Length: 306
Image (cartoon, rainbow, N blue to C red; front, side):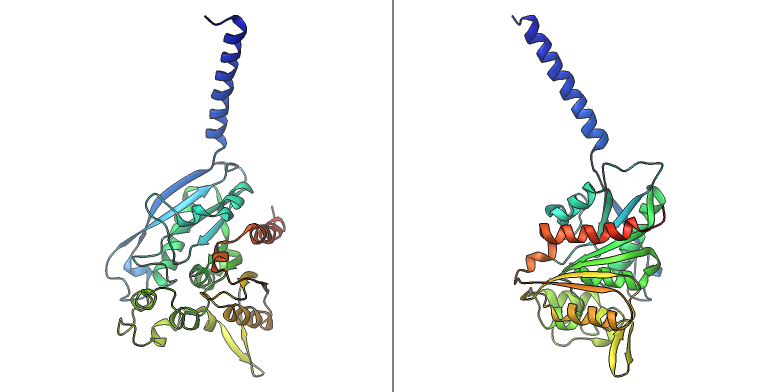
């Protein structure tokens, strides 16, 4: 038999747990998996011969509401180590997406094609079509922040260059910005060159020779570049900030240096934070880098008209 005090305590605990459960459900982060459709007409002629369905994820913060003030959206372009499936996201393993969600941002990503993410036309089209679906169905601002991580640097930069009117700013960790120098000449897997050849439709899908013509419009280091008074400058449409380990053996830092230098010479805004590390694992961040990234986005977001 329970006495009156014990019964009262059990009732209080039951009510508390019930309320806590309701609060968690009402205020919890929403994780939504959906499918993006890419039609042949979305890509250059001949690069897609049938409709393709890609996987995508959207995560909404606990502060998200269906009406009222919209939520700011961040496109987080994953690297080549893993992407989005019908019910899983590689970047769920890392703290950056949690930090962004905790601070009121929504985040999304797409798998980017049949083969591991190599930043090509299909990946950019998938991200753009996912953005359209999200903006049409959720209470988010249409202008977004874009982030790229390792090989996601290639995808995210190509997205910015093609959809700059949608982008407020660009952030990257240890990014691939030169497909030839950082990936083809320094492949991290036995399959890397073959994947590049297939994604970019090389005239010969082998590891024998790099096809500069096939990647001409999709290699960021050479895009929007001009020669001015004997110096190479780059016209980049949004502020960009990069974090990169100076000893990174997988994705070397030199292209990040060149990318930022040319943007600044072209009158743009680019900042490179060089980190004394040889750990390519920094391509998914660490507490210090994540905090700096959040502060960078917050400063820009808070300066926007309300």
